[in-house]
Length: 194
Ligand code: HEC
Image (cartoon, rainbow, N blue to C red; front, side, top):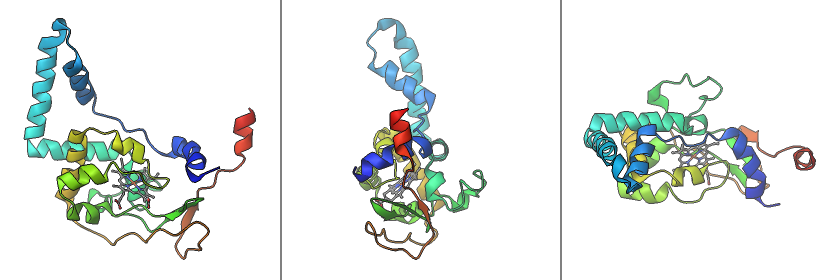
């Protein structure tokens, strides 16, 4: 069994689905539709989505919302899950030195505040869609629209750089000196045979 097939059931449990803003979804759906009876609605949705994107404060607010509901803090903000989300925004996304250990080795949630400070928006659109090791739900991030990814980028940049880089990932089987979550699923056969 390879690392990804082991990781998938875990991801289903711990990673949050990326939840798009309903207005964005509707705007896309309406924009795709050629049915004439929805056109008046389509233009009003599109106009409001466009004006959001042209208003820097609302784009940043939207980025904050997307980061929060798509679960980035759960891993990329130290103590966020343990504290039921009660971590001040200034500390969000500064990465974590608590690793996730599994057949892929030990990975650490990147400090996104430092990373995004070094990336242009165009770099981010590429970087955000590249495959990563577990438990990063990269497939969810890569499914986000450019507008959503840009909003998240602008929110993170508005916070500015902070914190230390996360530890470098360790190879499979390599011992680590940091704390880590044991991400090896147990008793999977029970699920398979049920
Ligand atoms: C279940 C834990 C988890 C969640 C949830 C999560 N990440 Fe990650 N993320 C990680 C880990 C661990 C890594 C390091 C993966 C590696 O080393 O290959 C990572 C890596 C990344 C990277 C790659 C950084 C680089 O060096 O290029 C980006 C970008 C990223 N995450 C963004 C996000 C965003 C945005 C969200 C919210 C949509 C998110 N992550 C949600 C755990 C998570």
